[in-house]
Image (cartoon, rainbow, N blue to C red):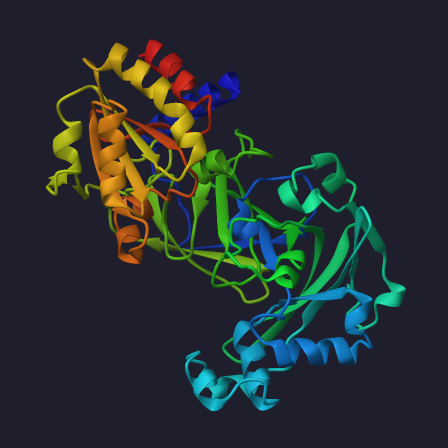
Length: 457
């Protein structure tokens, strides 16, 4: 891991220096990258783009759920639970309104334009049958979408597998299923056939709390096993492109030099190459906007911007934007005012709710005691309770600079949390005196790797 990290850091710095010393390449105003769907090799994109949750409508739409059981000829005493993945939220609730499962006020409250939905075909649903019996949980996925589970594979799990759902050997051995859905844009429908696995997961992080036992037993995760791949070549560099997600409006785009490797396990590392639609990217001293992806995800279009400007970002080698932070005394402080007085600054993103963050605090305290003369340590708590954070830092003698980002206030994500794409906790980011990112990672080895990097400076 250490060799991998250091080689990446040096490669990024070398690529940056190399491009600055070369003349601009004759790239066209628009770059069009052809994309194909691939199943291998494995690339980590992060749960938000790789996975979707599946559960029953037993609690949210009980009449509709009962109609599903009746349609599938399932009786309540059979103890079978039906889970449903809807692939188009708006079309689903439009159908619920048309069929009388929700009333007009409920439908209008969803903010759905019925004039758009009336022109769409019925959405494709993925149905799953779940049954607990003795020490096992059986799962059947209707992956041919015929509404009949009798011609589909039965997969058996230990009844407690769903509690942690971290048996990698079991997950790797699961059958690869076919998953069909469509995307709609500008009156165009494009159908996709993806490769997925499905498994039980009671505590998957996007599920909300509930006391409904049927709902808890119904919880599954769909994990995508393929992604779109492409390549880009300039005069000075070749790039690999990888794209993941289900909806075209929410895709993760990875663009990296081909001299480096994507990580199969760490999406935090891969985020160094992560972009979204309308982000800027520098190629051979020219700046492009990642303009669009065709609705069928066959082409990625980059448009040239004929203006020189600094690109601020969250990736290693990029300079971060200045932001105003809220400290634990109620003051607003400019981030660059903090970073300018020492050679290095570490941004530590944590929360009192985060067990791994709490476990790292003794190491942070020891680190700060050793390096405080040369390094600013700035902890930013993404938390719900301001007073809890303040009391925790005092009672645990965390004697460095602390700031608060309100976890309950979505607008707080428009600041440093959003700018630096903080998705995992704890995350550590090492900055130099010019506010450029030298290193970013998440996990128990991060602080040790920062120590090794500092020895090289």
